[in-house]
Amino acid sequence: MAKKSVFITPSILSCDLAHLQDEVTSIESYADWLQVDVMDGHFVPNLSFGAPVLKHLKTSLPLDVHLMVSNPKERLKEFFAVGAKNITFHAEAVASTADRKDIISHIHKAGATAGIALNPGTPVSAIGDVVDEVDLVLIMSVHPGFSGQKFMPEVLGKVTALRKAHPELMIQMDGGIDSLTAAECKKAGANNLVSASFIFDAQDRKGAIEALRTA
Ligand code: DX5
Image (tube, rainbow, N blue to C red; front, side, top):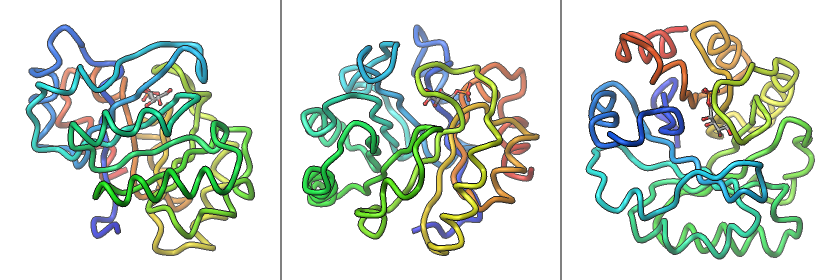
């Protein structure tokens, strides 16, 4: 799936949502994907936004939807309708293999790629049943729910193990990623880095994205 050495994926969670269009336009020439963090106040202790916010957003960046919700299957359609390129759901939210495969197949049938995410405390073995069917695995490097948290280096071992077993897999990391932690993520084998505050809080957003790319 990944042809570039690393994808840089800004997350709109920490942009100025009152000026979403301008914020996205400010980074779109430099980034590869755009991540939309969907939270339901149940799977994570925070609420964010859903597909209606994206309906009128104009961007050339592929939309990467990170579903931090307890009922991902019921939320897929609204993101198909806004043209999501990738949809990632959490392993912790969907326990059964049959349900996971069903979600992945729905995503593929809609023409998108499918990802599965692991919270910091969830081992890679928890997705052994579907790792060969997904296009992307997201290794969270913070407890999901908020931007601006500190990177958890203890998750890097999961990335190393996953990369060793799956040389072609897109491995995304998300949480506390800056120019220093990005280097650790890449060294472990991640090839898609999500970042919210490091990019959107920067005076020089282009420079911040380039710093992640070259870390
Ligand atoms: C965390 C979200 C992340 C978050 C990252 O729940 O999934 O995408 O926005 O924020 P930073 O990059 O500020 O840690």
